[in-house]
Image (tube, rainbow over all chains, first blue to last red; front, side, top):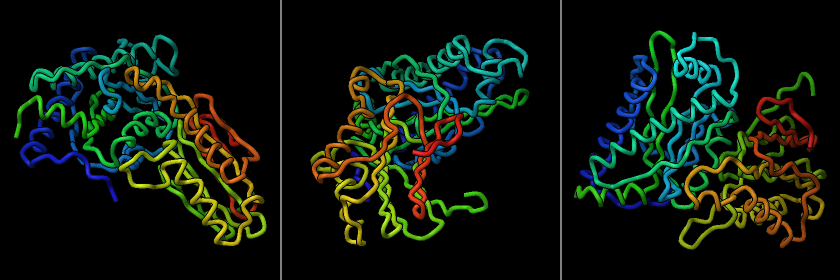
Length: 205
Length: 165
């Protein structure tokens, strides 16, 4: 049985879903500005999920992926993850660096730096949207970029969430360009604690 | 063994599972800082695996196998009820990696992989038990499998071939 997270009213939950949906869409728009490519969100979906199911919902715990992880300075249990297959991550690097698709075939220092910058920009836009709308300022940590099994990439996030709760409202956003067929997942995993702080600061009843 | 496909039972985050039929295997996928505790009872050809996420259950939380201090006693006790002699269990530990810290100072201090390893070993020690093999620490993800018929434990790190433990 799941531990009951902080109780919110239906109005608060609906406002929260709308807030993080807008924030995720803004993050993807920021990617368009950053890359100069027309990157569109294909799906932006907030939903409740058992924390233990997060790796499965993002492709499977043992599937090798490239993950860009950001946390929040103030609170350890708020995580932003950008998950791509290695092939897709290489395509993203090509787009970000203005190279012909297929140029990047591995992750070196420069490629990791480019993906980290992508995480900075998307995470920053996401948190700025929340700050602008609610007055609750959240500062992202420097991004961590690694290629590993998806479960391992998400491990810190999951362990810190499980210290507080068994269930979170996660937002998952898919995005891509028609031309490069890039498809990635932008996942935001806030604990009920941080959700409560933001909602309180916002004043939604 | 070539030609035999094992019936794999995935032990998810915070779960504890048992298997005792030929052809069955228990597996933890994509371990990072989590620790997989594998125990095999040679005499009865049965095994158990726990996927430990956190070192200890804090007050107010439901006591489940995601915590080392719940998972280890439960794993040993249940195998004992099924006929195992605890001191004869072949216990192997995998995981507890130090993944790149994410988050603010609080996260950097967590070192959750190390804490999970310490907690699992401490719980085993309380029961007078000790692992006979381990693949712990480092900074890469791992998948671990226990074949309950042979007791063989294999570990795969991302991008590498499997190795026997």
